[in-house]
Picture 1 (tube, rainbow, N blue to C red):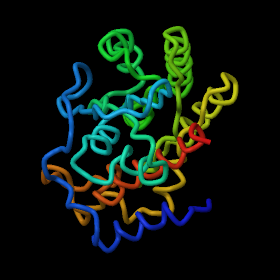
Picture 2 (picture 1 turned 60 degrees about the vertical axis):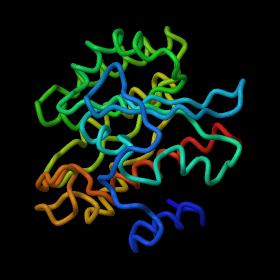
Picture 3 (picture 1 turned 180 degrees about the horizontal axis):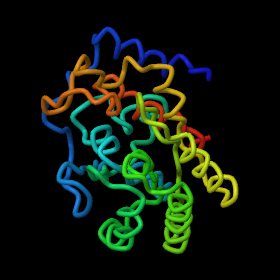
Length: 242
């Protein structure tokens, strides 16, 4: 995968901590979500009308930790850095412990509470693998969520399941890919590939700084990984501005 100079500038900044504020501070320009986890937040600054680049990140604790606005640059800052005319509105709708089972069961209510987002990132699979949802059930849940979102006039986007040390999500990523291909769903970033190649960005035995002082579990990203999820999503969504 080739990263342009803009993306690599942020990667370098993450590594040397030269220009990025420390994670764990107060969220910037955030608002509380009416659905999802207690940490859900969004930004109110939007891109010029009538262009709609708003996105809801619907997912689990990995999603919540990545998009809760206490690590910068966030998704909108990365987009704005490359496309200065645009500052996409986005919302963290990650909930700790949720699998695709929970996501499907709560999607109607979450859509009703958050009607203003055009793109919906479906960031599930880690807990499906952990709680032994079958790959077949996972595939069915994703397919049903895609259908619900499209009926509501939304555009679903599905990333791969982030790599976690000791967690075998191969069958789930295969099921996910089948949904993306068969339903012609927009692809999100390949988080499985990124974290497989950058395992140092995971919370490995507490080596990397954990949000709220949590210990490492070899699955949740540390602060550099949380920022990189925003960067990778921004890189993926560049296509809508071209």
